[in-house]
Image 1 (cartoon, helix red, strand yellow):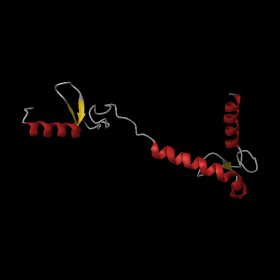
Image 2 (image 1 turned 45 degrees about the horizontal axis):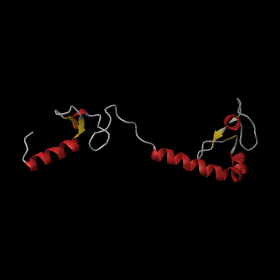
Image 3 (image 1 turned 180 degrees about the vertical axis):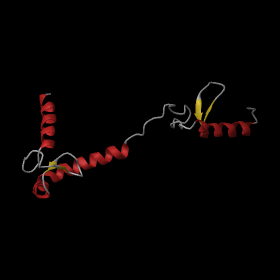
Image 4 (image 1 turned 120 degrees about the vertical axis):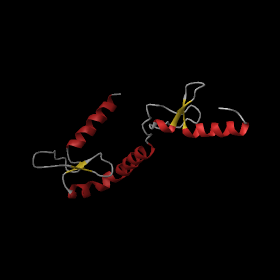
Length: 126
Protein backbone atom coordinates (compact mmCIF):
# COMPACT_ATOMS: atom_id res chain seq x y z
CA UNK A 1 0.00 0.00 0.00
CA UNK A 2 2.84 2.35 0.76
CA UNK A 3 4.49 1.60 -2.59
CA UNK A 4 1.51 3.15 -4.44
CA UNK A 5 2.02 6.40 -2.55
CA UNK A 6 5.75 6.28 -3.23
CA UNK A 7 5.09 5.65 -6.94
CA UNK A 8 2.93 8.78 -7.10
CA UNK A 9 5.58 10.83 -5.34
CA UNK A 10 8.35 9.57 -7.62
CA UNK A 11 6.21 10.27 -10.71
CA UNK A 12 5.66 13.83 -9.49
CA UNK A 13 9.40 14.26 -8.86
CA UNK A 14 10.15 12.83 -12.33
CA UNK A 15 7.94 15.48 -13.90
CA UNK A 16 9.88 18.24 -12.08
CA UNK A 17 13.30 17.27 -13.45
CA UNK A 18 14.88 16.05 -16.67
CA UNK A 19 14.44 12.28 -17.10
CA UNK A 20 17.95 11.96 -18.55
CA UNK A 21 20.30 14.21 -16.57
CA UNK A 22 18.11 15.01 -13.53
CA UNK A 23 18.41 18.79 -13.75
CA UNK A 24 15.38 20.53 -12.28
CA UNK A 25 13.32 23.22 -13.94
CA UNK A 26 14.31 26.75 -13.05
CA UNK A 27 14.08 30.30 -14.33
CA UNK A 28 16.62 29.67 -17.07
CA UNK A 29 15.74 26.02 -17.80
CA UNK A 30 12.35 25.09 -19.23
CA UNK A 31 11.61 21.38 -19.37
CA UNK A 32 9.70 20.02 -22.36
CA UNK A 33 7.24 17.13 -21.97
CA UNK A 34 7.48 14.00 -24.13
CA UNK A 35 4.77 14.58 -26.73
CA UNK A 36 3.91 10.88 -27.10
CA UNK A 37 3.38 9.74 -23.49
CA UNK A 38 3.35 13.02 -21.57
CA UNK A 39 4.89 11.26 -18.57
CA UNK A 40 8.53 12.48 -18.66
CA UNK A 41 10.25 15.80 -19.31
CA UNK A 42 13.57 16.76 -20.84
CA UNK A 43 15.79 19.84 -20.66
CA UNK A 44 17.11 19.45 -24.21
CA UNK A 45 16.82 17.43 -27.41
CA UNK A 46 20.20 15.87 -26.57
CA UNK A 47 18.90 14.54 -23.25
CA UNK A 48 15.77 13.25 -24.97
CA UNK A 49 17.85 11.34 -27.54
CA UNK A 50 20.17 9.91 -24.85
CA UNK A 51 17.23 8.71 -22.75
CA UNK A 52 15.22 7.33 -25.69
CA UNK A 53 16.53 3.76 -25.43
CA UNK A 54 15.50 3.54 -21.74
CA UNK A 55 12.17 5.31 -22.28
CA UNK A 56 11.00 3.79 -25.57
CA UNK A 57 9.08 0.75 -24.26
CA UNK A 58 7.26 2.62 -21.46
CA UNK A 59 6.57 5.51 -23.82
CA UNK A 60 4.90 3.32 -26.43
CA UNK A 61 2.78 1.60 -23.78
CA UNK A 62 1.63 4.87 -22.20
CA UNK A 63 1.00 6.48 -25.61
CA UNK A 64 -1.23 3.51 -26.54
CA UNK A 65 -3.12 3.90 -23.25
CA UNK A 66 -3.68 7.60 -23.94
CA UNK A 67 -4.94 6.86 -27.47
CA UNK A 68 -7.33 4.22 -26.10
CA UNK A 69 -8.65 6.64 -23.47
CA UNK A 70 -9.43 9.18 -26.19
CA UNK A 71 -10.84 6.59 -28.58
CA UNK A 72 -13.09 4.82 -26.10
CA UNK A 73 -14.14 7.78 -23.98
CA UNK A 74 -17.90 7.80 -23.64
CA UNK A 75 -19.60 11.07 -24.50
CA UNK A 76 -21.29 12.99 -21.76
CA UNK A 77 -24.90 11.93 -21.34
CA UNK A 78 -27.55 14.54 -21.97
CA UNK A 79 -29.62 15.71 -19.04
CA UNK A 80 -32.64 14.09 -20.70
CA UNK A 81 -31.19 10.59 -20.36
CA UNK A 82 -31.80 7.75 -22.78
CA UNK A 83 -34.79 6.67 -24.85
CA UNK A 84 -36.55 3.96 -22.80
CA UNK A 85 -37.24 1.90 -25.95
CA UNK A 86 -33.98 1.88 -27.94
CA UNK A 87 -31.64 3.07 -25.11
CA UNK A 88 -29.97 5.66 -27.35
CA UNK A 89 -29.22 9.07 -25.78
CA UNK A 90 -32.01 11.58 -26.27
CA UNK A 91 -31.18 14.66 -28.33
CA UNK A 92 -30.81 17.96 -26.53
CA UNK A 93 -33.04 19.48 -29.23
CA UNK A 94 -36.58 18.98 -27.87
CA UNK A 95 -38.07 18.94 -31.38
CA UNK A 96 -36.33 15.60 -32.01
CA UNK A 97 -37.94 13.89 -29.02
CA UNK A 98 -41.57 13.23 -28.20
CA UNK A 99 -43.51 12.70 -25.01
CA UNK A 100 -45.86 9.75 -25.06
CA UNK A 101 -49.28 10.76 -23.66
CA UNK A 102 -49.97 7.27 -22.32
CA UNK A 103 -47.03 7.08 -19.94
CA UNK A 104 -45.45 10.56 -20.03
CA UNK A 105 -42.13 9.07 -21.15
CA UNK A 106 -39.93 10.99 -23.57
CA UNK A 107 -38.84 8.84 -26.52
CA UNK A 108 -36.63 9.58 -29.51
CA UNK A 109 -38.06 10.60 -32.90
CA UNK A 110 -36.99 7.25 -34.41
CA UNK A 111 -39.03 5.25 -31.92
CA UNK A 112 -41.97 7.66 -32.39
CA UNK A 113 -41.76 7.12 -36.15
CA UNK A 114 -41.60 3.32 -35.73
CA UNK A 115 -44.66 3.47 -33.45
CA UNK A 116 -46.60 5.56 -36.00
CA UNK A 117 -45.75 3.07 -38.77
CA UNK A 118 -46.85 0.18 -36.52
CA UNK A 119 -50.14 1.93 -35.70
CA UNK A 120 -50.78 2.71 -39.36
CA UNK A 121 -50.07 -0.86 -40.47
CA UNK A 122 -52.31 -2.27 -37.73
CA UNK A 123 -55.06 0.23 -38.51
CA UNK A 124 -54.96 1.69 -35.01
CA UNK A 125 -55.97 5.25 -34.25
CA UNK A 126 -53.58 7.61 -32.50
